[in-house]
Image (tube, rainbow, N blue to C red; front, side):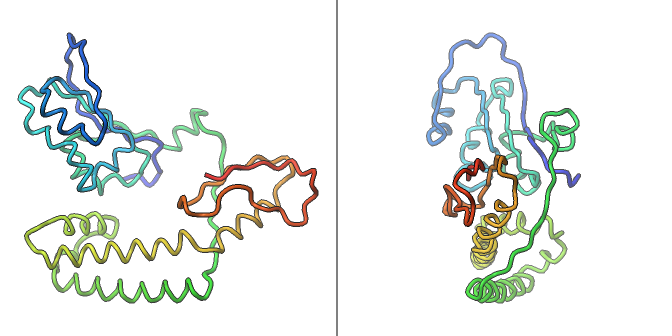
Amino acid sequence: MDSDPCVATPYFLMSQQADVFNYNLFLFQTAQYGFLEHQHPVLLIADECHHYSTDENCRIFDFVPYIKNEHAYCALGLSATSDMDRHADKIGTGLGKEIYRYRFSQAHKENIISDFVIFNISVPFNDDERCEYAELSDHLSKAITKLKNLYPSIRKTHKRFFFAKLEQLARQKSDIRLAELARMICFLAYKRKEIVYMTNAKVNCVKNIIQRLPETAKIIIFGERPSQPSGRVPFKNRPRKSKKHFRTI
């Protein structure tokens, strides 16, 4: 797969049903039951369709195998997540194969998005974060070693698809011990990644960068998690007449 990230990755299975005028709208929580009950032609639009790969959300596709007329079902999936391969096995049944990919490079070339520059800035952990990260890394390493001994074929899995395979193992029910180990590894990896996302140094880094920007700069700050500090970042030693504006998301 091309490493260039995606602006949108639609998935769809398209068929034509020309003379359909009546329609029913369903909320996501009840859609899978509504589709089976009404047995009418279905148009399913799945925005952020990578979220439909979870055990709970993918249940919306449970009705698909029961559709007798393939022309009575149309689906369109949209996602801005570049790593869609890990979700394909779960959403492919309901949304079909990938049919179009629109990349940042193409969007930039067509002036859909403005010029941009990406800088990667490393920030340090504080003592507590460093300690917790090291502890989680140790547990994670031992758990992965245990997994490789219990399920040797995982050694052949490319690192790019490792967590997709891990999620499959966590969902399977034939080997409970293996499923529990896979879920534990996913949990440990998530907790460790959370430390990186939420490190205090990130907020301080943003403040320092803002201090160096022109007074007239307009800024949008995207946070990793909703729980991160939001609102106005204080400007120390800045004049009150500063016209610097920004928004945290």
